[in-house]
Image (cartoon, rainbow, N blue to C red):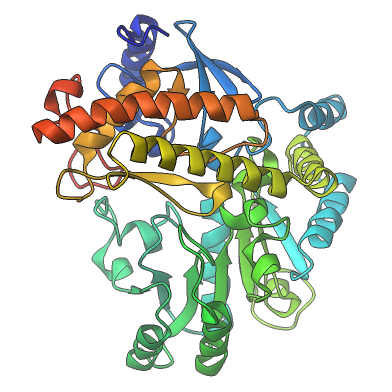
Length: 441
């Protein structure tokens, strides 16, 4: 791509077609063209490994692949071959396929802290099923979510707490309360305030920072003491922290946990897993009231479960998590050095675990800035780097990472000019990118 002329005429036309037919122009808000600089939102033609090509013929080194779902790289041969083998055998039947048994056995061997598992198609279904199960098991209505985590579900119990709450009854919103990550005292205060009302605590067990020493164990003890269900949302931490998720790395066992994203390497599969005593309430072998846990027509498509099994085997046999960490550490070190070298080390900031890096763009007063993010993204795109985050995939080469660092250095040089002018506008090329969660379009 020409660094001075990153025009995308075919992508622009495709985006217009998308907006005419699809609300928001994308099927996931985080993929919307409002998340990219004006007229610089590439529409993808295809991908291979760590690279994607847009409909204009430009090739990019890609980060954050599929919103963290494609952790092995696009069209990974082991995964695609497993899928291909199933396609000729049928994908969905009127009774369970033997693949469902094999997939459950493989998952529970990979995540041994869980005793039962049920598969679905997306993360929201799994987290909402966990909330419903917790409410049924405790007889309580309130849900306590971690306030520092950006997303749990498209369903009302969570979306009602965001700025995009239109259409969610206030009565539903009032049943969700929030607690801060890392603060056991504040969480206990919340549980005391709503004594015997909170059905579950739901959180990502780790975030862009490591959990404080003893925090997860302390949360486990709080949940036990106050009789609520502890739910770990492992959509992101699953596989990227360890094959068994953050619970496997930190040694704290939740009552329920949810997995997705990396589980299928881009194929649609998610999982709700947990203690048999709880999970069986959604089954047929218990004496109590039945819980409508998860019942999805496509939740056990054979090819998606085959993909999940291939992903798990690849992670375990090839040490993928360690590779993700090594690549992330190389990238983080390079970006920090490049930013410091251009005098913007306090403004372009890399954060997070090496396997799950994000970046912050800060203005001259070191406040988060969508305008400076726009400038930064524009220069990355001009250099052939598509990076809404710096989340790595296992398909990246060291040469890809080094090339990315070179492009970041060029972007930081422009960033320095904008800081010196105290105005990024001349380098933005149009309107600023926007946060996903906002009240007005």
